[in-house]
Image (cartoon, rainbow, N blue to C red; front, side, top):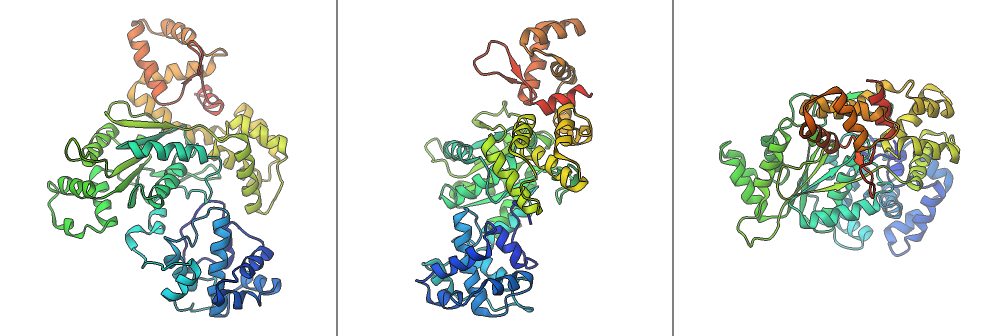
Length: 483
C-alpha cells in the first residue's frame, strides 16, 4: 500500500484499509472508537478495544461482527480527518460491503451491514449503492493510481473547478509527470460530490505508464488507441443507457448527445496527446456536448489532460499547472518514506535540492526516492546523477521521449530548435533565431511556426514579465542535451 489511491478490494487486509484511511496509529483508532459515544452500536464494541487486540487484527483478521462494524465507523472518522474518500457518504454502503467480506474480516467474511446500521454510522439514511457511480470501477482505468491526498494542489483544484463551471471542455496542460491525471481525478470526483455534475466517466489513451521505479508498464488500455466511439460506448455502460445499445453506429452520437444534454455528466479523457487525430476527437466531443439551442444551459462537460495545448478548437479552455511547491514536496516525500518503512531517510536540505532539480515534478520525485530504496543508493549520489543526467537518461527518455516525438511528428524541425534551446546558456528569442538562421535559410515565418510548436508542446515556456526570454524544465534540458 502506498500513499496512492487504490480501489478497495476483497483482498485488502486491515492494514491496507488503515493506510487508505490515512494510516492512523493503533492508539488513534482506539481513541476514535471511544469518541463515537452517540452511536451505541459502535461505542459498546469500541470501548472494549485494547492495543494488543487491534494489533492482532492488523496481523490477522477481525473475529467478531460487532468489532468489524465498529471498525468501519472508526476508519470513516479517520478518513474524514485526512480528506480520504474511504467510507464517505457516497461510498459507505459499497465500501462497508467490501470490508465485511475482505481479508480484514474473519475467514468467510460477515453479512453486509443493514440500512439501519449504515444510517447509524452516517447519521443519515444511506442510499442503495448505484453501480453506475462506483469510483472503484473507474479507478481501475486511472494510471497510475492517484494519491489519496492531492498534495499541494488545493489552489489548482479550486481554479480548475471554477473553469469547469463555465466551460464545455477544459484541458489540464503540463509537463510529463507533473500530476495532470491526479488533478483530473480529484477534480472529477469533487465535481460529482459538489453537484456540478451528477456522474462521471473516465477514458484514457495511456497505453504505457511510468512506474515509481521509472520503468515502463503496459496498462489495460494497451493496444488500439482510444477512439471517439469508445468514449460513447463507455458512457452508455457507465450511465446505464441500456436502451441505446440497440442503436446503430450511425445513430449513437446523436442519441448520446441528447442524453448528455438532458443530464449533467462529466466525460474525462486522460492522455489526449497520444490519441491519433486528437484535435478531431476534441471537435467531436464539442459536437457531442454542445447545448441544444442558443439559450440552452450548459449541461454535460468534458475534462481532458494533455501535455500539449489544444488551440484549434473553439470554446476550449486550458488550465496550466506546474510542479509542486516545496512544502507539499516535503509532505509527499515524508509520506513515501513512511510507506516504505524508512522514515526520515532524506534530510530537509536533500529534499530541497531534489525539489530544485525536479522543479517539484511528482513522478521524478518518486523515481529518485524509489531508486535509492530499491538499489540501496545514497540519496546524495542520486541527486548528483540527476544534476548531470548520468544514470537517468533511460528514465528521461521514458518520461519525456513521447513529448518530443509528439513535437517532432508535428514539425521535425521543432526537435532541432528544442535541442539547441537546451544547449543555450541564455535562452532568448534572439538567440534561437540566430541558431535557426545559421541552420536553415527559409526565413522568419517558418521559424515562428516551428517555435509555436515547441511552445505549444510546453518544452519551452515564456518567462512572465520578460522580453523574449524562455524557460525550460531542467530535466527536459538534460534529456534534450543528450540527443
